[in-house]
Length: 129
Image 1 (spheres, rainbow, N blue to C red):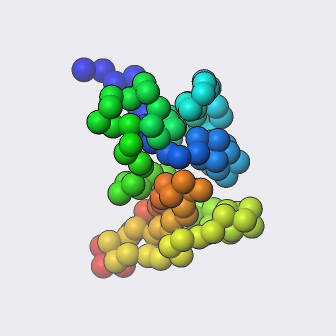
Image 2: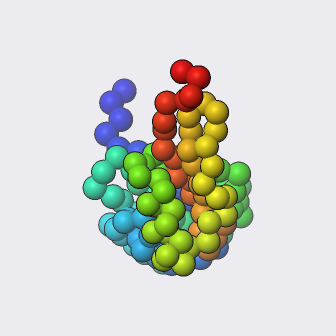
Image 3: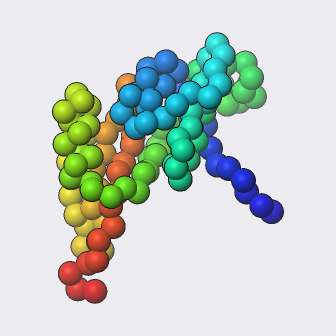
């Protein structure tokens, strides 16, 4: 198998709200769109995002009423403090403040208007390494 691209499909109530959140604050661009659908991409290693309106008929019946929950979209970045300051200055609520775990993970979280959790992570060398 040769994977040539990756995407995460998120079922949300308001496609436009999530699209605007990811294009405004995370540098995504919309590549395709239709009623209840938006495909987003970036020009780096970030995973593509596909946003589908909850209840859309293109989904199998058993999936239509599901909502993106219990998952976290994670971006590994550099300059995590700068990213936290930038997002805060842009009016994005930091839902989990910046913290550092003993294993060397520095992270914080924000949440989009549909409840999609986005985590930014920067890896460091743990003190006991």
